[in-house]
Length: 227
Ligand SMILES: Cc1cc2nc3c(=O)[nH]c(=O)nc-3n(C[C@H](O)[C@H](O)[C@H](O)COP(=O)(O)O)c2cc1C
Image 1 (cartoon, helix red, strand yellow):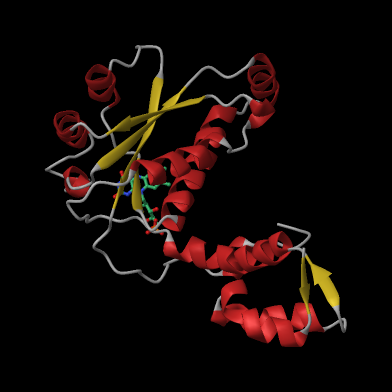
Image 2 (cartoon, helix red, strand yellow):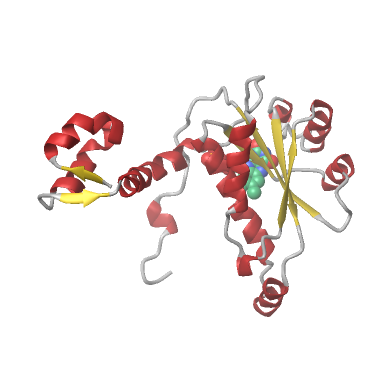
């Protein structure tokens, strides 16, 4: 537990929160005259403020440094994928981490098309995460049958999002690639024929600057209480 009054807060200010969040935190901390907050509560609040920044930071990076990604970072990124939600908690996925240069080049070839100029940058990334769809559990399959929805597609999309956001949080760039030759990738990585290769995610240190997001306006995509 840490006790925060204005004097203590000013003294420890820099170690507690980033400067940019100081104003919002002050409002929360000092609105009631004196409050006791755990350091975890404070940390959670700071992270909430920063989440949108993280979302903006994540982008499809298409140029990378020739520099490996540290194993500890990869483990954190994979953990974020492991903890993703899924329909009926089926977790219908397997992540294959590819760092072997020879295999990476082959997979990059399986994801690119010279004629269409697709994914020519994929050879640069030092890590490829290949997302494989595994069998869902009975409840997910039954629910999907009744509702005519293939839930694993949604599940894998959510996993991919967790992975890319976690990468951004670690300062690692990423790019999802859905343009791929499934048959070739299966053969390169010995993936059984009955499994679906859904996505390849590139990971590496990006050389690209943060771009403004090009997105539809909020009015175009949001309905309040009706379509
Ligand atoms: C399912 C999926 C498949 C994608 N496949 C490719 C791909 O094969 N090659 C590529 O360069 N980008 C691919 N992207 C990235 C999108 O083009 C990108 O997310 C979109 O243009 C928005 O840009 P941003 O990610 O930089 O915000 C894919 C994204 C998703 C979600």
